[in-house]
Image (tube, rainbow, N blue to C red):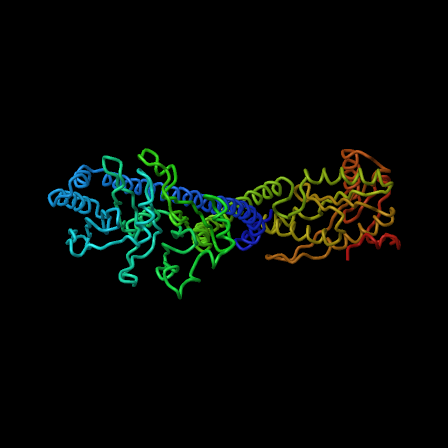
Length: 555
């Protein structure tokens, strides 16, 4: 029976370990890859959807916010105090108008100026926000704005209509005010109760409020929020120096439309959409301060005018690096997790490999115990019968002959009795080694029990060949055996039966060989007898060799 050492067990476990580890590693790697692709793709899709929702929300908030501005405008144009002043322009009535405008400025905190200008463009009432400290402008400081574009545009409208100027920077005395003060001027004509046009109400809306609203709403999304005017200039950009390019002569090329003409054309071709580029994903929508959705519910005539500048494009940009950052983070996380899982898989694979190897070893040991002699390592009776059956079948099909040698040791009992069972076992082991050395790899040496052995010669060229082999075997067994306690000398008696010419059944072959062996013992031992010639005693010391027997002697 074969015994595995720890080193042999380790080596035997390597192959199943590698097979198991590769299998589980491929399975785990495939699962991680599928999960990565799903998560990465799902994240990119989720980002796109979130940006679309964010842009839509920003547009809706701007519309809702600006609706309140138009409501304020229409309220002021028809307020009772103003109508009373138009009917009776006294100081008291004017004071009531000023107070109403002042209160609205304080409460709203979003108008830099609120003005009433008469039909000649002269400022009758003006409230300045004054950075959070609103006040009524003195009469002597009021100006005539008849020549300003916003007065002309607003005054020519019919009742209920309004004018929206472009969103730009406030200019004072021909210079852009600093710090920058984004401004939208919204005006509507004022009619008295008799239906006569008496001037305009003008709101200077602080555009920074609108820009901040867009920024605040967009901050919950992942993209960079931008606001572009109708000409493609940035009104809002993460990099402040890119804003308001159209207001400066040296920055006229600082425009999204000029730097990205193809994208800008796509923006202008449709109200909203999403464009994927190598640089990232652009999500855009259109904000129009005079569209029907904005003015729904307001008492307006829908003939508000602008020069197209009140239509903006709100854009969110997610860079490719932002999108890939999640993929990189996911890769790192999955790599860390995967490394731990691969280590766990390796450990489990190793324990499985060890278990499989130990199981195979136990099966081999059980097989070995059932089929191999635990002392000599030779096949036992069970395996011998199987080998003999195979040899008979092969000899029958191949029209060739084989031979069975039945061997009994002469003098073994004396060694066993005189030197002890350990010496007897040692002797049997050495005899088995010498017998195997005499045989070819195709032959079978088996221990039948006690000191009885058998040899199956799978192919025998002739009777003479079997004779030469048997003599060689007897000569080897007759040689002294050096044991631990002493030197033992024994001999053997052999019976030989050829198959299939003499017998074709297992029982018959064994029976004939056994009988021939006993004939050899009865004739003086240390000799062999052929089953088909049991009456003839052949002395192994005086028998004649033939040249055909040489092929049976193991080298």
